[in-house]
Length: 266
Image (cartoon, rainbow, N blue to C red; front, side, top):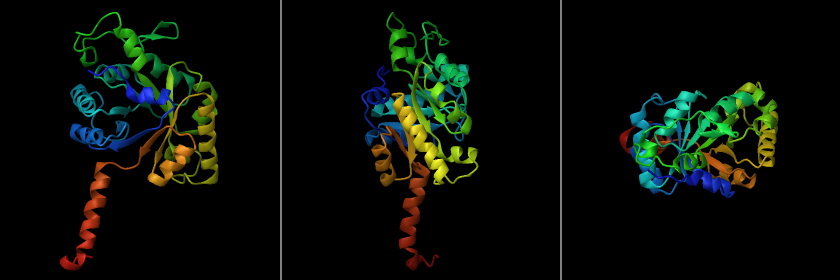
């Protein structure tokens, strides 16, 4: 079991981390991404995929990530403490909580991820699970190492979270923030129009406020040009939109379009 969280380490060094999404949740895809040198793989359990309660799946995907030298960024359906603890015990290091609105939402997620929190005992418990080498690595350093290498981030994607942003950023243990432009546009009354001037102004406000709090900020990019713009805006966590299915469709459609004159297809 790899103890070090290189995703978090790069963020703390103010470096950019680049990631891609898998929509099939297949360990082989994660392994391919890792072999390509991608910093992290975004795995979504909020909208797609199997249940995040599936420990076997998490063990398989964390093994694939470790084998190929990449990290996982796992978006859970919510901030349920029991689910957070279960996922961490499988070896996941970086958890992203969507749709948060208040300080209490954020604190609940962070506290669930820590053995020691805010000068008190956190909610995470000792387990002879994969992350502890099935009990073989349970020693005096285990708790400290885990707390140092576990990172919880949240998505800012609604107007209530924006209103509470200053307080949210003061929650101890919050390691990063990811902006969700699509849901934010819906919340602001401009559904799926994240290019609207008011939405863009709000996104810039979030970026500036998060960076001023010395917390890494992340965002999705539709392509390389947008990714470069985000880097210029000091965005550190960048996930290129799409996944293996979208890439497959793009390649196959392009190839068949080039052959349509020979096949009679339109």
